[in-house]
Image (cartoon, rainbow, N blue to C red; front, side, top):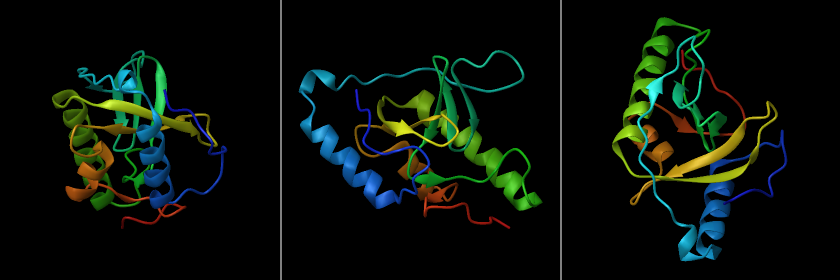
Length: 148
């Protein structure tokens, strides 16, 4: 399991995270590479266990996880209609990507809110990179940028 050298609250850029995860994955024994496929729902007001909150945050077996290295539009308190629509699309796309693909989770550390920072790796890319390619997220640049 990857757990980390990054400290909570530090500003990470996507390149640093990508390079660190790649180094860590290449050092792990082959037995550590366990891919999973789990059906995710969209989180509601019910107990959150395995569901998607928005385009860059999920609950997985009761653990709140923030996808490292990406920034998705805000679903809660969007700044404009465009951001709200894009956030809804990103949320559903993340649910579909996690539910329809085999992936493995690479934990990096904790963010300043206590969420686990992690990347979901498929056989060919990361879930974050898929969201970016679909235009539903962008690389994290150390701070939130406006979507409107």
